[in-house]
Amino acid sequence: MSKITSIFPTILVGLLTFPAGAVAELTDLHLPVIPRTAAEAERISAVTQPTTDFTKAEQFENNPAGAATVRVSDTRNAFSQPSGNISFEKELDFKVGNGLFKKLWVSSPSSTLASDGLGPLFNARSCQRCHLKDGRGHPPAGPDDNATSMLVRVSIPGGASPEDIADYIATQPDPNYGGQIQDFSVAGVDAEAKLQITYTEEVIALSGGETVSLRHPAYDLTNLGYGPLHPDVMLSPRVAPQMIGLGLLDAIPAADILAMADPDDADGDGISGKAQIVMSSAYNVPMLGRFGLKAGKPSVWEQSAGAFSGDIGISTTLHPAGYGDCTEAQTKCRTAPNGNTAAHDNAEIGDVGLELVSFYSSNLGVPARRDIDDPQVLRGKQVFYETGCISCHTPKHVTHRLDGQPEQSFQLIWPYTDLLLHDMGPGLADNRPEARANGQEWRTPPLWGVGLTETVSGHTLFLHDGRARNLLEAVLWHGGEAKPHKQTVIDMPPPDRAALIRFLESL
Image (cartoon, rainbow, N blue to C red; front, side, top):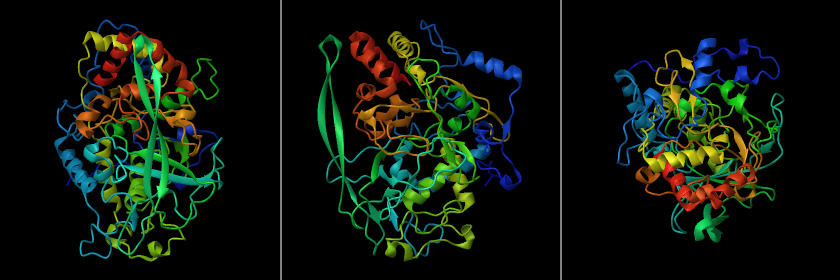
């Protein structure tokens, strides 16, 4: 196997000092950054300006991931291709990482020491079981369906706040159930609960005599295995997001993201994007949050480690407890055998394995755009831009220059996100804070690949909990900062609304 290009370079954090408030300097520690020159910064500023010409496609628009873009596939493997600019040698690392991503873990003790340690509580036996074909998850289809690609975060108010992060909203795990609900368990240990969802419909009248029905979910946890939930518990149901382009999102300079933040709406445009700042478990300093539906993780590496621990119950050197998310109240879980071994850095998956999974996750290629010159797509793009959707769904970025990480280095990318937190209103609220995100705030999701969801995942369910059954419903759920934009969509001529959806389907 080739020498792995590190997603998590070794840095002697203890020898570094950081001035108070120097968030921009803290947030890219995990990347081998080559600083931009003044001339490069000027070029980047010009090339990332939103277009005002909708008569034709922009230069390079067909390659949303720059040189890392991959060919469009009409199969379920459309999101499972390596970066288009990956070397032959590194493609081997990608394939080994894919194998670990798909690996089915088993409970301890087992003769397969490289694969044991599952749980004891878990949501799935592999990464692939949640992110099937590297695509988007879905809520349970009915009372007899499981929630394998959907989980429920849980917390209660209180706990400690990091001194170095302003406006941090402290929360702590539920004393009986921890930080998330695991609906599966190994033999001899009770699972935590089963998620049930019921929906009520709301009809929305649109211009031109059209109507759309939105479904409002109500969530219930049944078959509680460890007593009652805390009376102040806060629940946040979430489906697994698509996996493409994560390494490129990781490589957007933190300073560029922070420059777009306007938490007090100083420019008066009604949009008040806020940077998520979290404590890095790897570096023990504040870093910019990018990953997760509320941007609760600062890097692909930490996101991968957190998912192994919380979703599968597999320990890493970052989360070394062999019992995963089990609480002190779950004694059988705490005392069950685990798979921590010296051969795997006293964890159940060692740093090399975690590095390979992170490399795989960072290099899942973004498919090329489709129909970019189609007149309806161009009209839909104009509607998208002029309606103000790009206030949050920022079209273009240029990634860092990175030493030894060419797949993500200095690429013009089109993810349509600012990676900031925005208030989406009470309709989409989970009412559960996470770090600096309050109960109505969510990270702007990237839109690249959204038009291939049905091809890859076999459904068209969108938003954080899959409540929207198509892209139009997803748009009409927007509230808070986006409420005026939603109203514009409701009021616009039906042909423009159809063009808007056609544009989104082309992404």
